[in-house]
Image 1 (cartoon, rainbow, N blue to C red):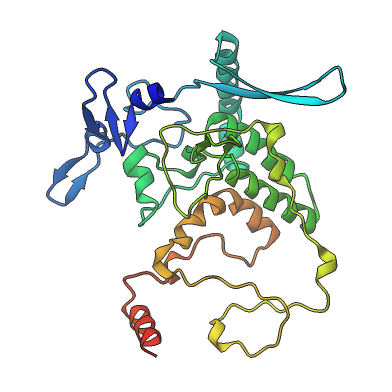
Image 2 (cartoon, one colour; image 1 turned 90 degrees about the horizontal axis):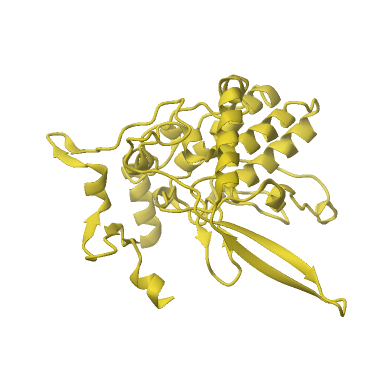
Length: 313
């Protein structure tokens, strides 16, 4: 482990030379430069049809490790679990190429039908980093071809349901898959548990040097456990300031007052890009954009003044 620490090639946002240990900032690798209007970002901006990096892109991707778990039954009847790690061989790389081929054959059709997102990433306090740090311009750029193929198949299956309850439940399951191991923003957690962290381990869109990807069968978080017996009587859903509530209830679901500390309106677009056409069909009266113009941000002086007044009170 000490040798691995010394051989680290990326540390604190910089590339570290394995031989001379000199560091190069990522901004320099990207080709960022000063311009009259501020900083000009140097990465090539991806186009809609880009599913993997082009050969001349600064940042490339490669499969470098495959991990699987084997459960063995001992002669005494007890079981033991072994973790295996393997570098990809020729057959693994052929399967990766086949995944990309299958995806390209379906890509435009699936985008048109809403099985895959087609939305552009709108610049914002949180989303601009995707364009700056990786050159990603569309929401599907945040996913590996294997993730797009699997989750596109989920979307295709979703379209086969006709009743609202089943379709809505399936859509929620898809959302959980996108979060728990379904994007390039899922970090590999090398702790004792050795798991793939969720996309939103923190409330940000973090671009990673390496990431973990679940297999289809390991999407165990598909199901939502709802204890319906715990809810009785009628429910009232109202979107309003908690200080103005006058109804007596036993259970409350509230949104914490993070204000501009978390850009929820921008983060929601990660999911809305996948939900868009399904929501239009399920709930025609709902909006499918994040309503950024209505979000309270730090630039809202009235909001800041109200917070100061509350603290003074």
